[in-house]
Length: 279
Image (cartoon, rainbow, N blue to C red; front, side, top):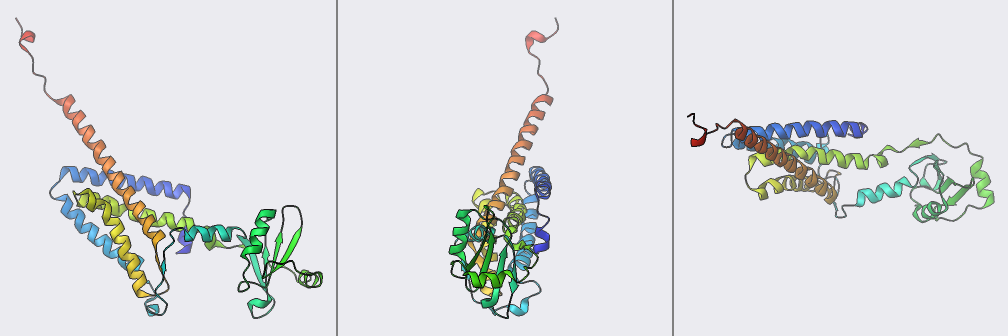
């Protein structure tokens, strides 16, 4: 899954939105041509899509043996993923070097130069369970060594740590892919909104279909307890994606109706009055 997110770029997102926009126009046109028949077909497609989404997004693909092995977790804070991204961006590029078998003998080597404010933040966010020592370069050209409690390392220990060759620094991919994951979630629910617009005539049903499906997926993830928690952030993002699909199809339908009226007006026969009759 993470490999797919590497291809989420402005270009690919733009292409996806164009394809979804064309799909919205096609669905709106079919809906106008067959206002009685097409909604039934759209409801059938919507039900099929919902079943597929529940199976793929709700169920643990290739991991059914993990069902019930973890706790039932709910992430109530919808911004938790972005807060995690902000915290991990502080030292987004770095590498760990294990000097021994436990975290008590692990050193973290930061690669990005930190400003004084960022260095103070790094001192507050160090974790004894993550590493025993942290090495950060700073924007003023210094190298700062701190321990797992945010204190400066004494000279003797620093000399010992500096004698160990640092490992090659690699970018940690999962931190930078949180935003891409949310974008993919939103795009996945745009087709649900497109189909919901055609399947139902009630705006309430159109706007609640996507959130209802997303809530069902999060509930399945919570109930299976297979390592995935129910996330209110995903629920909000999926709702936005579904609303975009409804809005795109509504706009397409409105434009098609306008062009249809304009075409009918221009092609309507002109009835001549008495004054225009030949004498």
